[in-house]
Amino acid sequence: KNEVEQSPQNLTAQEGEFITINCSYSVGISALHWLQQHPGGGIVSLFMLSSGKKKHGRLIATINIQEKHSSLHITASHPRDSAVYICAVRVVGSSGDKLTFGTGTRLAVRP
Amino acid sequence: DAGVIQSPRHEVTEMGQEVTLRCKPISGHNSLFWYRQTMMRGLELLIYFNNNVPIDDSGMPEDRFSAKMPNASFSTLKIQPSEPRDSAVYFCASRDGGGYTFGSGTRLTVV
Image (cartoon, rainbow over all chains, first blue to last red; front, side, top):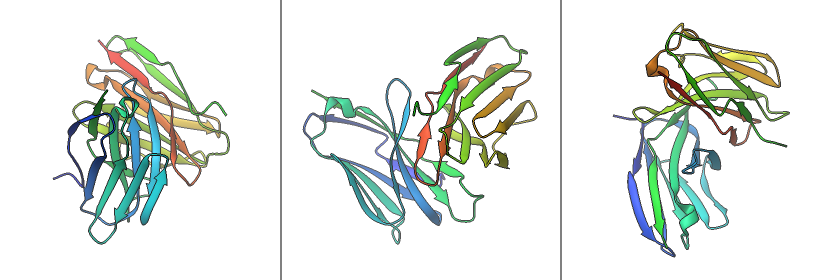
């Protein structure tokens, strides 16, 4: 079983819809990252969370440390949000900055 | 800042040849990471450096892989000899204590 599980694996939405991507992990963590990988392949770091909630534009990320769960929300989705969204955790006790990655959620937003 | 710069963007090489991938991190970032991404295994950490010193190389697949960081502005990942199973996208990323900044990646194809 992977230490980091994402759901759904694939998601198709209509432009304007509210989108939620989930990440569950089974280990103690010191931080959780959400990354975005566009079809061209580039990876962008969206959020780093250790507690609570962060917001950037139409993106909101939340984390519940007790439940070992994080969500990434996209409000008023747009075709340019189409990408793979990857959850990654920094495991407590792992050497320094080592991240463990989820397998990603592929999002397609249709106009 | 131009971001994390990787070269080459694409590399096609024959099995058995030596391959060198290069990375220039963001100035002032004290951590540098090499990741490999494949369809089967997703993103995996190969090695990371802190202040030019290798901290964790447990992800380096085997002795054919080596990485160096001779100074704060340059790192290389070398594969010698290369094999078809090394075909992947190799990402370099740097970090200054906050989020990660990824390079555009090097797509390596070993034929």
